[in-house]
Image (tube, rainbow, N blue to C red; front, side, top):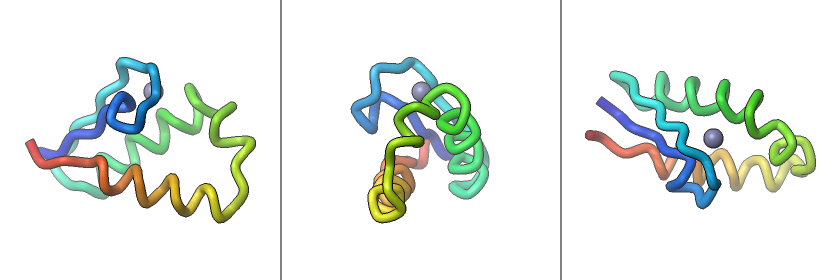
Length: 63
Ligand SMILES: [Zn+2]
């Protein structure tokens, strides 16, 4: 199992995603971010999004 938590990115949110694979976890995290945190995502440039995407991937941990 892999786990992502918004708190790991310093976001004040209790959302946690778990899935069998890292890709699946990332997908759930992106779906959550795209709806609940769309205000954060919206103001980002493409370069900032790339950094954010990398951080997100790095924060997904096996559990
Ligand atoms: Zn969240």
